[in-house]
Image (cartoon, rainbow, N blue to C red; front, top):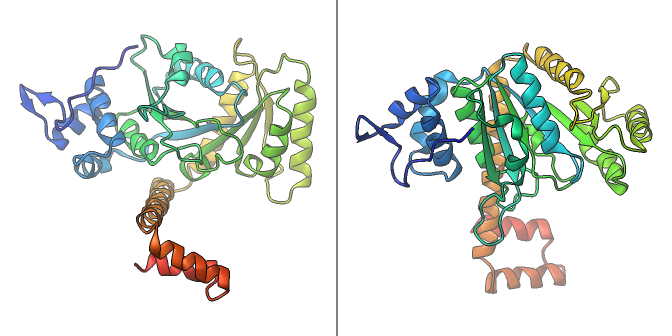
Length: 327
């Protein structure tokens, strides 16, 4: 599979030799035109001036896709497992959109594309669309662009969207706010990462997976996770703990059945409620970015003055933060 090249910056692709409007582009996207999907995704990723019109035009076509998020420590085999899930989903007739959030290049800021290279099940298959996005330094495993791209793939008729986080450990909890189904992946031999999972990712999991299940220690890792579920009051004890071997596909059908089971359970929720949760995430991220910019812009005399007042006991850190936000 080779995605069509996106339109040059400042244009939304062309229809009949003329620049396309947002409505025209979305009409082509809804019709499944790959060039239109790629163009829309690019505009949404870079947050161009066309984004408000694109999102508005997509609204009547949203809320049909099931979004499954895959997260977990580095080395757990997330990309390989997502590739196996793609292959299995296609045998069942699902159209699959994939958003793989890769680490950002320290030079260009773009995605390094490691995840996409490993997703061989997507090659030459028009029923699969894969886009790698840069994390852009976000520590929650996602970037706001990923949420906007979910809308594009949903509108394009992909009934299953797989979202793979960047792979940085227990900080990857943003997926809990974005995905309908949260799949947390571990593997034997990760050592302290199992402990990190117990204290962080475990609480967000709808499904726990021990990948690389043919390796020594796989059964022990599985039992550790089962035990962690039984003693933590903050997690559901009915969370399935599954074992897979992504390279061979062993256990993938059972995992897919579990994803669909969670999907059926949440189907009772109105689609708008699920989309509202993603919108809340975008608002929270935008607010955090605004605060960070204000602090950066306020660096220097004002920030030093506030720091001195905190050190002298004249202000608490919370009060100093309020002063910064009121600038």
